[in-house]
Image (cartoon, rainbow, N blue to C red; front, side, top):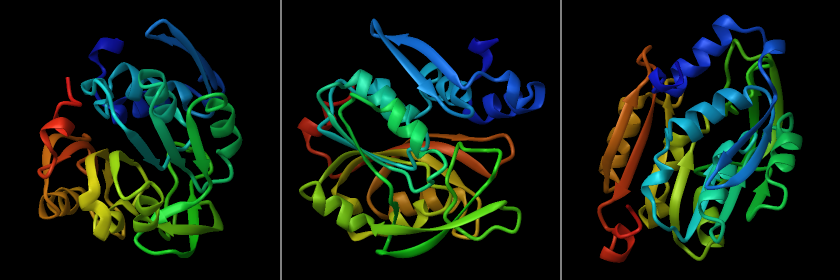
Length: 251
């Protein structure tokens, strides 16, 4: 059955449809490259299947990479996977949702990952964070009538994030439920070599807009997988400005 599941959306829907939350393990052990990893948190199994088993963000394409920024880290499955594949690479994980921070910190303990409890957007300001009570797979930076909880958090401008890293980001991962569209409008996006992530339909935009923004900013869409409902999808993109050395990072 696992071999037939090719999309994280399908994995999530199957898990939520056929299993009660109490039936889905919140602590999962797995091996990759001979290294054992443990990940804890709600829907940890679902995210492991999508990110590790299905390689939905294409991490296995890379032979090496200089630095990684994980925006919308949640419980840290992407960062754990990246840190295991590239132990010498510094990873910067951003997650503003306080409800998942304990699991994030636990999962990333002793790994080459720096955690920041900020949201990331186009500008630096205070924002209202809304999120679903029963779904910790994402943090939503928008107002939603169906959101069950709200809190205020600090947003940091993406340009500031880039500047703090010396003006260049090798791999940027976006799964921030709406703020990705504003991030793609940031001046420093041209300093990003590769971008992967998810686009969602929300007040800020929709998948087709995200793909067009990437193209307008000088990126080639290497992969696009639309979810069955057509309201979201996963993408990989590369900067057309990449040097031969940066292109050589790929397998």
